[in-house]
Image (tube, rainbow, N blue to C red; front, side, top):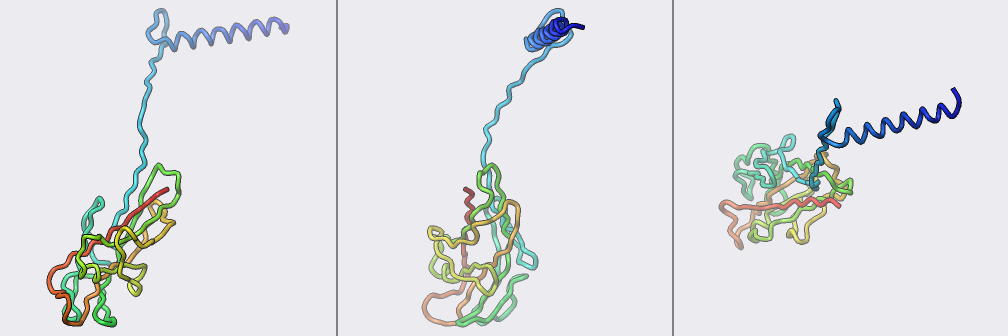
Length: 198
């Protein structure tokens, strides 16, 4: 076979495939056993994130879901009398009693350029003064502290990894003094955890 013949044969094969491609791409056709139809799909991709709060190992039960969670300490007092709620630890501290329990935080996010998230915690500004002074949060039971308002929230971590859980401790301080604000009765203390992904 000469070079000219090979070249002609190659051009003929290319032309056949080109015409076949045109015929196949035309949709409805006559005198053909093959045709195609194209489906152009579209979607708007969005970022997504959430921060789950759950019951930690040996912690008090956390209820709720989808950003609204609850945890009850049971009956607490400044003398440490009686029994608090299940899995609540009570320790005598200067000026009263500290009640603590671990919780589990799990950040989840997708579609972001950043590989890690920042998590902060603050106290709801709508809480009354007595509740604000009672609520505590920290990395360990021994280091729980009063929180600022959400606007000046405390940094927990700037390197939270998607899907990786970690424990924090929440607490309630009950003073053993008298006078001033009456601490008796039910109190609601609202901690606000915020996740931010760059």
